[in-house]
Image (tube, rainbow, N blue to C red; front, side, top):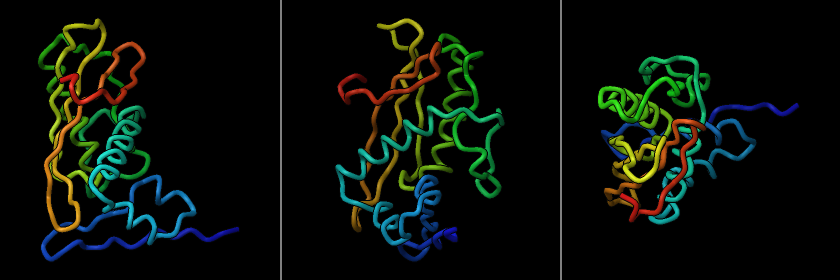
Length: 167
């Protein structure tokens, strides 16, 4: 049986929070150095990787319906609470769900700095909401802002990455 150990966190530069390997990287047999390289990456590849990871995160349901404390969150807290009881037609529900999504992203996708989430109904399609996710990424020594939309289906509880011109 192979011994698994969690890779150590690493600081990018003085005064910045440590980058932790992504959850699924920590659960695989992949070498920590490869995982650390994927935490940084180059521009387009990094953006696509972050989009995929966030789509995975938002397609997993956790049992805890509350906001998570980053200091105590574990792999069991991965995902977002079940939102089938919420409606994208109710503004207060949209704000609460956006806050829960933002909280999960900030904990489980460390490559997206200062994530922000805006959720709104999709006027063209019933039972869908649009999730606009924005934040900053570090590419080499530069910090770049980016955003992308996701479709959120209230019936299937699944998200999918949308083309950038959807927003």
